[in-house]
Length: 95
Picture 1 (cartoon, helix red, strand yellow):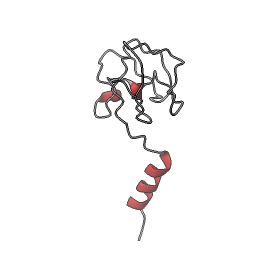
Picture 2 (cartoon, one colour):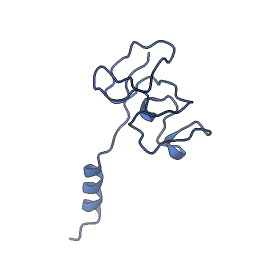
Picture 3 (spheres, helix red, strand yellow):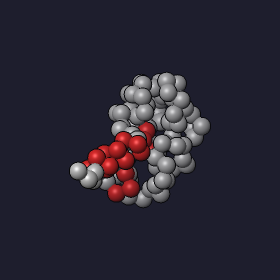
Picture 4 (cartoon, one colour):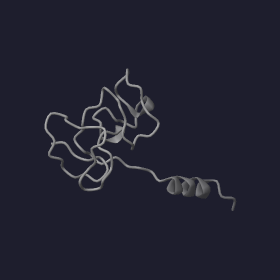
């Protein structure tokens, strides 16, 4: 069952019918984004398992990727910039 990668809500969408301007009814995030695609994977190059995709920089925003396929909605962690900076500062802090 398709779901939102941002909030985890189950979506009533049949046959990958997701338009560029469609948003999740739960969190209002764009549905046609890299994070909602079944090819999205942070462990591979450009975070996309599809080798011929032209991957956009913004993984959360709507895009025009022709290879987009709505994923199953597993929540993907979005690391906040502040959390990353805080972790780096604590790692390299002088004692």
